[in-house]
Picture 1: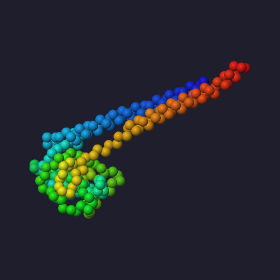
Picture 2: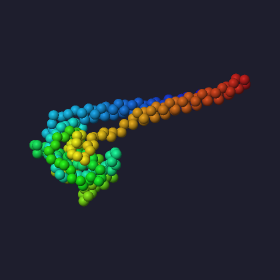
Picture 3: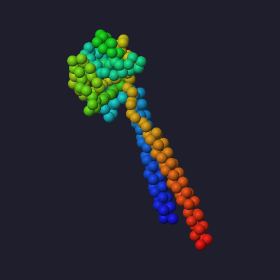
Picture 4: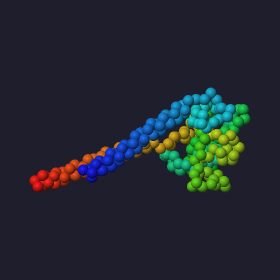
Length: 230
């Protein structure tokens, strides 16, 4: 009897822990979906103009329509895009009529177009504000001689191009031969799969506990019958 109670206790506690983990993942799923929905809303919510002091917390992903001059200086960020494959993001200074300079992510060009001349001048661009920092401990330093960067980092790029530390990512075209790469939000959202896994484990744990108890009960019946005959 004590053995059965111990197995039942372990079974209930184990199932409770596993179910709790599944519920926690469902809560995380709701939280993550809320973040993604907020970002989606921000990306389509236009600002009346560039804020005096752009703030990452308040203004990241916000939509803007700006007119300015694209300077000839460029930073080339190694990346890839379908169907072209390997290529570069083109980052250039963007000077507004009031003299403010931003980093402009013009978009993608194929590898063969890295050194091709690109039109600049005064343009009107629709895009979103962004503060990217894609560097990690394993990101190589920029190859200054060949002008190849391996990740976007708004702080270091702003220093290199003498702009404000904010990036304007074009959604509309900025010149022939450059394909805009609008912001894609790559926030992992695997919480539903994790929740299903935990709930599945809880079901399996409960089933194994029940099976163990049923087998123990069946094994105990012959012993009880023998004891009754004696």
